[in-house]
Image 1: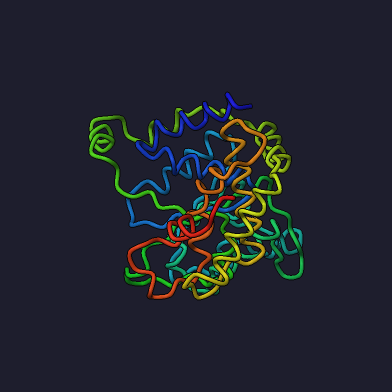
Image 2: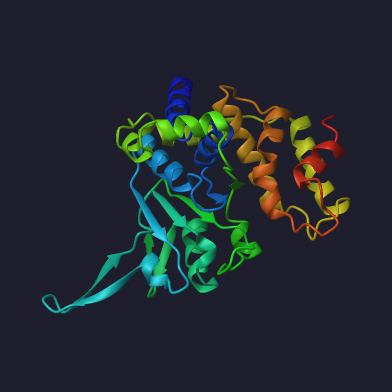
Length: 302
């Protein structure tokens, strides 16, 4: 299993150059059965990462471009009357895929954004009273532009909390950008990717994440982090119980990727920024230091 994970990470790194940490976080997110939010300016490889993940895992893939005129039915599907059968026939929307890229999700109205909520949380959608299951595994990768850009609608806290992780790709290093400029088109590379984590292997790895153990001192460390965000730090609100569970689940997935079946404090620290920062309503007094750095400095491991 560890060889398959390492081979997948290595293959993804040939597509997304110089972004080893982000690639590993994205894979940890899907192993933990979570959803991923990528916040960045356009053109930094968000779509490339989603497509490369789908090909490396052998999963069905759909991309939805979110715009201000997008309707929930454009995502979920619609019933259309068939004159031959004199019945309404359901035509599934692009959300009926195993990996769904919700591109520029914060350019759509809140009504369209909320159409994903049930799908992300329950892995099913209800249309005109009929509940339809989504294919498994079901993994949403949403991208959003920085809020200072025009034409954006901020995601509400309830929807942000549906994402296990939020990451940012950022600009490539000079050496990676040079290789990108001189190398093969990323779209051609993606077409040649092999399926290294097939469906059965992926499902087994997701089940193994549940079996990764966390000792009582490790759980106590996570609890101290949760309590710090609620009581001592200058945030609008602290981590919810669901946020604490997300931190534990992501830490287990990170440990499994590293070939271990027990969680270490290093695992918690590695995933902490991507798991907690979008869940904390930071006040304006937090200026030069990210929330995760402040937490790691303030909370003792033991």
